[in-house]
Length: 411
Image (cartoon, rainbow, N blue to C red; front, side):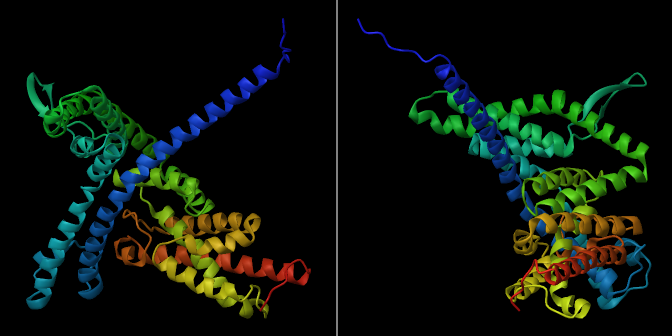
């Protein structure tokens, strides 16, 4: 009879390692799946924001940039003032229509996000219910309430972006489950996918939104507003500081995306503006581009290899387009110094702009969105302050490395 020798501990250790690997893989795949669905919804929502923002921006340029209407006066008040006639009056009418149309498009952003997030999870049959859920997240269904002895329909506080996320995932996975569990003959598949499941999903959406998500999301939104109001300006500055630091930290990486996700929710809810994030996106690009233009004037020599001067011009152009990736090549060359510098410059510029009164609600950093900024002068000053800080510090730092022989530049 043969006996097999058993090595004590080997098997269990291997099993433990395997289990740990499986758990890590499951956590990673779970987060990756969550991110994939969220980013799918955002990718479909962004064109809506861009279209609405561009049309809204043009509507602001006409009265305040071309016709010199007082910025404190609305377009409608300018029309009713009687000061504008002929072609100017027509331009104001068109601007008023474009303003209404452009900002109406913003209202479709959250339903579009919810619809395509649910679609990413549950397939096409989840699309309609997802859109319904997103719409009710911003325009909740009125419910009956007893006031002064009489029943009256009253709309509760909207659950907003938080409610949109919750209903997108709930309805998406619910429809996915229905698709797996409801088996019908092939000839009834069209009935199943175009009538039965959408109807069940819509009813489930009604129940979830009215009795669960809207009350919970509305409570959370009220809580956030109360906390921010209690904190006053200190709360807004703390939010701007964290937002700008996280945005500039990894230039489009996971931290940046997470910050954008939070900021997008707050700004679509009109809870807090997105000023700090929009500035932090472009300040590193402008700063690095500027450093390639002023290095010789500051220290009397070039401090970059020659290929970086073309990259600097590209970074400035991308900055005007609201794109942060132009600063990535500089960060890859010397990340330990550049990343803290980006974060410091972004905080300095964003906080300066916010402190001087710049307010931006439209989530876009490109130059064509600047007309929508309230306080464009403080906004640009903040941009200049942050960019100049990055440029000057970087030039002097690299010049010192060159003098100490720790950096060789191919001019």
